[in-house]
Image (cartoon, rainbow, N blue to C red):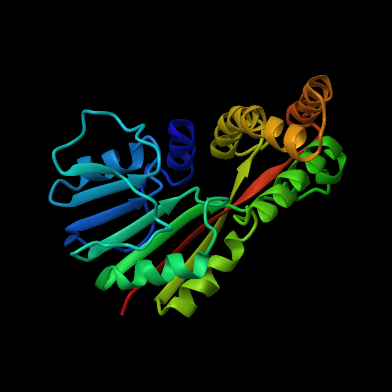
Length: 257
């Protein structure tokens, strides 16, 4: 999670969000806060705001800024907050949401008038601008399996491009969507994208290690040796300098009237 935070920081030039929040931010909710690093950074830079980070796993540090608290909670359950928020943030929640319409409806209901919601996430496809993506046969096979597995699980990895429309349906206005790229590997010529690509390469290796075994052993019935050989082929595709893969990154925000 902290590596992902660093990658987003590189992408956004150190900014934590893109929504035009203004100066009068009093209450902030961070959905799926993970290690809590985004919430802590926001609390440090906005000392007048109360920042609440929620996650199913209590993996956040014990020491936090005085205006930052963490709670073990499921953002897919009914929200029972007594006071509305001025900003609701969610990062890398692709594959974590079963009912996206409900999530945006609850965010709308729990925002103050004029408050913003912002979501930052990658859409689960390996793309390229020079038609080299088709050369990554093992990586494409891998991501296809991940996408199919997430759909069967009921929490898709590839629905991020629909979030803008679902925000509109929930009642948000002034909705903006920016699409960026996370290159995988140091292949870009642009120095900023090259640095992002180096970090994203290592992040992608971690993802392959963390998620491949469950899908391929339990769902597809592969044995351990087959899985290890396949993982090596996927990693070789990421390492190949002739293959210029990237993940599309969506940042979408909207305002409650």
